[in-house]
Amino acid sequence: MKTIPTKISFKGYDAVPLKSVFIEKATCSPIREEMKKISKSENFDLKLATDYLKWAQDDKTIIERNDRPHLIGNLRLDEGFMHDIEKMHGIPSSYAKTFVTGGNSFIGKYPSGRKWLLIGEDEVRPKKTKADISKEYGIDEKNIFTIPQQYYHLDMFIRPIGYPYVLVDSPTLVKKKLDRMSFSKSPYEAIQLRSSFNQFERQRKDSGYSSCEDTVKALKKAGFKPIEIAGVFGSGINFLNAIINKHQDGTISYITNSTTCDSPFISQIQDDFEKELRQKVPNVRDIYFISGEDEVDSYNKNYMMNNLQSRGGGIHCMSLEEPNFEIWG
Image 1 (spheres, helix red, strand yellow):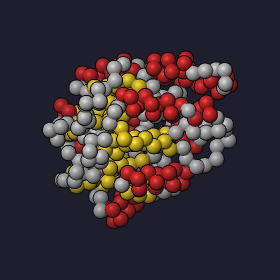
Image 2 (cartoon, rainbow, N blue to C red):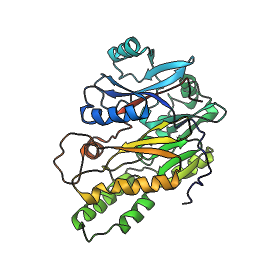
Image 3 (tube, helix red, strand yellow):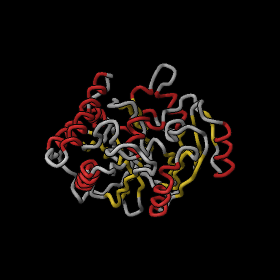
Image 4 (cartoon, rainbow, N blue to C red):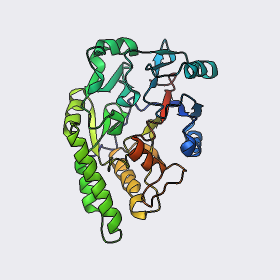
């Protein structure tokens, strides 16, 4: 895969400047201190919200409506939460029958300022058409693109980083990286890692999910430029499930899940990802890896790895982003 020339400047708006990130008060204690430090460094607000739904991303989305933030959510969203968000943060809200799962969609802008929307292909059905979604989100139907799903949500295998570029997990590149890892110093961890990846790939394929090639083809057809990267090493290691903060100088910061644990072999996987990411995305300024602070009874895992493996979600799933609409585009 060719890397992006360093002369390219990412001027897209899907890598948005963040104003706030909301995390669930009742379940976020393992990541709270890490996120506080990152928010301070990145100059966005970290806000706590209580709706008792662990995945803050999936059931609600803050969109731009009438030139101001507006929260829309599915029918599971608690009325008390909606009231608190408006009272405490001045963000009005409403239920949306045609709500698109937050983790299964990405909103962005073309350089012209027109919005686009990527959605997982299973979001469109007879009672929720592209026309319905267009009306709810205020995005032209022609700029709504369905993407084949390599896994259950888009945010588990792709990550837009600035139009037209989109990171796409490549199992082929992951396998090549695993094949290069040495068995000599850590044979047990190496065998377990390969076994976990192979099992994950079998389950994914047996469940009928799409290939990396299908995703890449669909993104290209929609006018995007996919960048294949080794990002998902099984159900517990996922670097594509990430938050991005865009800076005024065009650089971005990348916030994702960590592999830091007691095993040096497993811990170094995030260093390899950082090296590849910086090579392929030269405008990355800072990269933050969230590990979580709860004790995990395993030599080879941290809290976030266990969260991904056991509960099926990472840092992007746990966060609700509020873009800074005043400077976004």
